[in-house]
Image 1: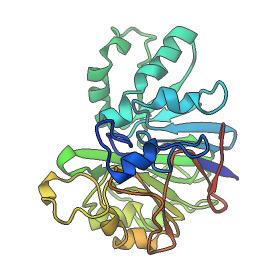
Image 2: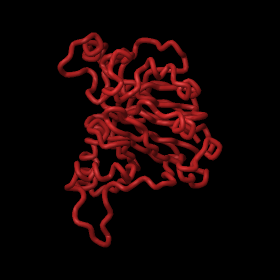
Image 3: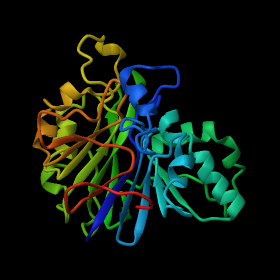
Length: 301
């Protein structure tokens, strides 16, 4: 199976450039070079997974309309999964609901069960009175996960520091049987996959060792959020996402065969090379073959 992960957006919640800022990174992001946006221009975090004849959208932030429009032609994903109900991961849901309502489209949208009340509070108009045949526009991700793009996709809760909790997504071979309850899940029961298991986790900090032992072992790829280079001078209680310094030291991240850093603020210049060659920065428009090294592509993934 050949599958591709295409990054639509790789910024933190405020985007780069900040519209109010002229720091070196924001300045470079605004500077067009031969008609190309600056290397550091990036939009709120979202990605597309394509495989097995399907496309899965990971999160739907406020830049979603522009992200999908720049793919080079009409495009609708087969399914969508939402990690948590913060603006930078959810506000594009309105565009998706417009497609369903205005174009009569069919779209499977999923989120962890504990996120659904927050989504309903934000988009109450999409949750009218129930009837016998009524189907809510966003469904709970089943305990056993979803089979999409040739993978079994499962969500697991992660600490989001000062911002509460978020969820990460674990991808493994869809040919495996339904996953046991996370209460008894161990690394030995996590299915092996081809080309390998991988995790998409943009909004997390202080992941407990016991959680890492279950979900973050033997990864071919880890997509990890790191908003700043070094926040060691910031009060821990006020933080919500790892920094690059921590990502380079996390044992479970170092054990992954490849790490792509996303959720990047204007503190990070992606032109700088990281000290460990297995780590690199994700950029808007980057397409990563999950069977081969990353290549930058243009147009529709």
